[in-house]
Amino acid sequence: MTYLALRNLFQNTFRLILSISGVASSIALIVLLRGFLSGIYVQVTAYLDNTPVDWVVSQEGIRNLLGGTSFLPPSTEDLAQGISGVEDIIPIVAQYAILDIHDEKVVGYMVGYDPDIGGGPWSLLAGRELDDDDEIILDWVMAEDHGLKIGDNIEILDEEFEIVGLSADTSSWMANFFFIKKEAAEQLLLAPEATSFLLMTAKPGYDKASIEARLRRRLQDVEILPSQVVKQNDLDLLVNIFAVPLKMMVSIAFAVGTAILGMIIYTATVSRASEYGVLKAVGGKNTQLYSLVVQQALLISVVGLGLGILLAWIAGQAVMEVYPKFLVVLRSNDLLPTIVTGIGMGLGAALLPALYLSRLDPAEVFRR
Image 1 (spheres, rainbow, N blue to C red):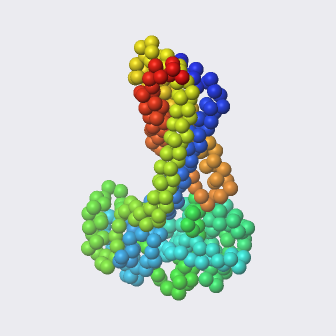
Image 2: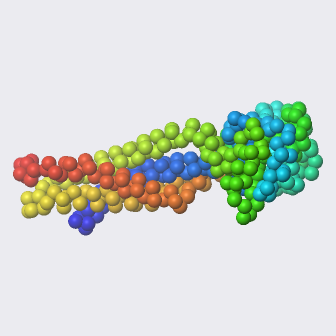
Image 3: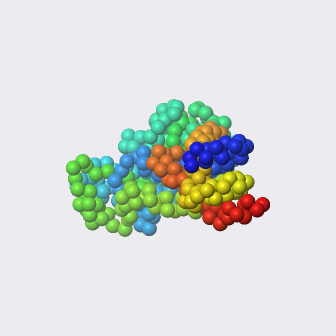
């Protein structure tokens, strides 16, 4: 039956190419959409992923890093300093801000930090760390989009800053990060000694649950959340807006690919009805005929699956090259769902031809 399935496939090369192309296009779209969604996840949690901390302390009621404006009570950092088991405390000022670039208003996510403590960019593509309050490290994608380079000046809330560094892995579909000194951020916001978040790390060997309990007893009227919870809150707030339509598009791509493959296999089956009628007449069982069309569909699906993954990788690289703000992440652990999708496409496509064969009457075929 496998030989017959292969022979039938290669009898019409154009139809075979069309089948494989339809499956490959659908798989490529599915993989690309999943990669885009994975990229959004990476971008949303990039700051906390690359600034490893155990807890984020924020204003009461603010449970996100990227989803709200936070200002902590002035005494919060001093109170936290004396808590047993806390190794590092990184204060930052963080919120969205408007940059004036070539008379164009651009939204960015400002992080004001102390270079001696941490909380700044984790990867510098070019330039150096901050020394003065009038210096800024800009995301390289933002700089490239607006024709900026190290040494140029930009305006933020009527204050001039000189670009001294370009950061990598800090771009986003929503807003790119930029970094200034904490004191400069306080001046921009007209809020001396302001702190938006405290990023806290436990000492090695200490029980984190006990430390968190002490934090909650000492620090009143603030939110104390594990960093994983904050990251998930950001994802729930920002990513779910896009997750539903993207997943719907994946479902549509699967349905279209299955329909294309099913119609082509069905057409090929009908065109060879006389051959299948002969097989039935000489004792061929329905299960054998089902196996024939399933093998055809699966063979096309497997080839289309491999080609589709390759096309998705090429398309993803092209998208990131042309639009570096968008990140497409193709992970190996997404390979199994993709394989299952491809096999499911083949099995689904075989249903209609199998139904036709089950109703095929050899005598009726011979009378035609």
